[in-house]
Image (cartoon, rainbow, N blue to C red; front, side, top):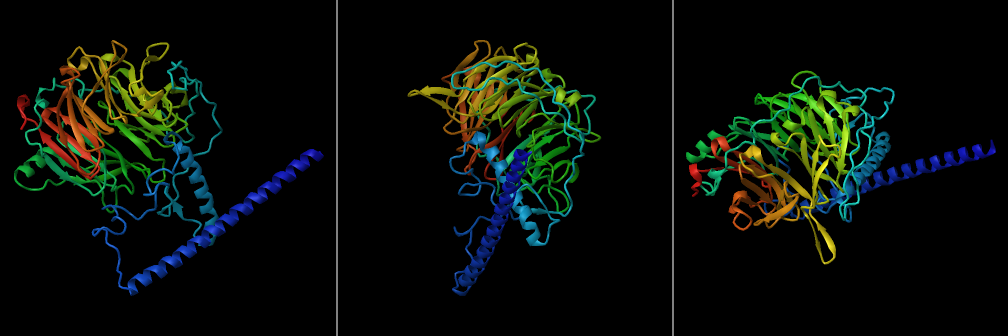
Length: 577
C-alpha cells in the first residue's frame, strides 16, 4: 500500500510541475506577443514620422503581396523563408516533427483561450481563426479489433534497411458512412492505347505556344476532361481555372489574351487554401480538394461540398473512368471514396499521411496508396474498411509515386520512394513483389547516392508496341528506363539538367518537365543516343509542375511555378516549326 501511495504522490507532483511549466510558457508567450506588438507599433510610427513610407514589393522591398484569392496567414514551416523545414530535419521524418509541433501549438493555444476571452473560437490546421462553427465530430464507438492483412515478404537491397512489413491495417474510423457496394474501375484510353506519337516528333508548330496567364502563385495540379476540350488548373492562390482549349487557341490567333471559361472561386464558395488536386469525373464535372480540408464537386461555377472545412486535408484525387466517383487519400492516413450520390465511405488504412494513390483496370475494385512512412497498401473499394486493406510492401522514407499498370499487365502496380527504388507488385503472385530496380541509386567513391523517385510511367503492349518498360524520373536529374523482361534498368535518357518534376507519355514519346523550366521530349524507339527529340524553355519562373497530352487535338499542355500554363499545337505528321 505504501509503495502505491508513494507512486501516486510522485505522479501527482509530476503532473503539477508540468502544469506550472505550461502556465509559465503561456505567460512568456503572451508577454513576447505584447512586446512585439508594442515594438511594431513604435517602429511603424517612427517610419511614418521620418517620411520613410511603407516599403513597396514592386520596388524590391518588403514582403510579397498576398495571393489573388488569399487570406492573411502565418508561416508554414521553420525555414528562413517560412516554407522550408527546420535546419537539419530529414524529409522522411518531417511529418512526425510537424505533428509534435502542432500538439505543442494547440496546447499553448488552449492556455491562451482564457486570456483572450474567446474560448469558443475555432481554428484551422494553420492556427487561423475560421467561422464559429465546430468541425464535424466523429461518433464515438467501442474500439474495433485490428484486422490482420496478408503480409507479403519484401526483398532486401543493399542500403535499403526495411523489409516489406507484416503490419496490420487500421480499422475503419468510427462514424464511417459505410462501404461502397458497387464499383467499376476500368480505365480507358488515356496515355495507354494512344497513337504511336509521330505527331510529336518535329516539335510544336509555334515554339512560343499560347500562354494561359492565371495567377501570381504556383500551379500545383491539372486535369483534362475525357473529350480533351477542357483543362482545369489548381493553384496555390486557392482557385481553380478552367479553360476551353479550342477557345484559348482561337483567342490567341485573334491576338487576344485567352481567358478562363470559369474560375472556381467565389465569395460564397471555394477553397481557403492551396488547391492540392483536381480531376474531371466521367460526366465532365470537376472535383477539387484544398489543403484546408474541403473537397468540392463543381457543376458550372456552383460547388457541392463533399467534405467540409475542418476535415483532414486530402493530398490527391483519382477519378474512375466508368463511374462518376472519385477516390482520395488524406493526411490522416485514410482512403476515401466520394460517391456519385450519398455520403463518402472512409477508412483509415495508413498510420501516416497518404502521399499518393492510383486505380487501375487490372486491379479490379482496388486502390493502391503510399504513405509518408513508405508503406504501400491496397484497399478494396467494395469493402472499404480495415479488413479489406493489405500491406504489400514498403520503401525507406516516403512512398513518392504509385502508378497502376495498363490493362494488359493485370493486377500490377509500380511504386517509387525516397530510397530511389522502383518496385513492381503483382497482386496475383503469392510473394507479391514481382521486381525491384535500384533505378535512382548508384555508388560513387564508396557511397550510395540516392535520388527520390518523382513519377512513373508504364510503356507496354497497350501502346501498340512490343516494349515492356517502366520509366521513372527522379530528384537525381535522371529519367531511367527499366526493361521488365530483362529485370533491370537498361539506360538513362539524356537531356535533363535539373530535378524531374513531372512526366507524361503519348505512344512511344516521353515528356519530362524539370526544375529549371525545361520541357523535353524523348522517343523510346530511337535508342539511348538519339532518343531526345527536342526541348523547350517552358517556364522562366521555376519548375514545370504538370504535363498533359491531348492526342485527339494534337495538343500539349504544361503548367509552372509562375502561375501560367502553356498550350502547344503540333502539325500532322510531326513537321514542327
